[in-house]
Length: 74
Image 1 (cartoon, rainbow, N blue to C red):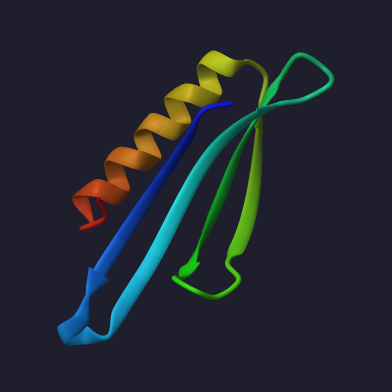
Image 2: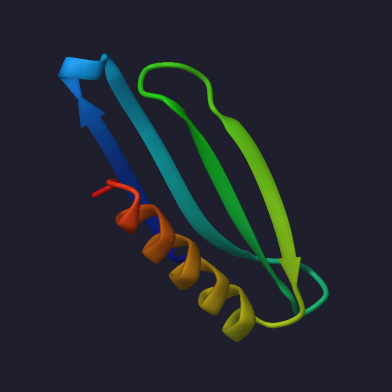
């Protein structure tokens, strides 16, 4: 399973956020991109997006990671 954990912390704005991306294979040969986000130390929101192949899911993970890194996550 491929997993990426990103954080964005800005004490001046009282901002402590996390964003997690993970790939999980399904039983039908596809792959799910599981995203979880929220405030560090609290339960987050989870979203699962299904893709027909692991290659497409990996491309979606890479695109979302790039988007979040441009937004200040590291």
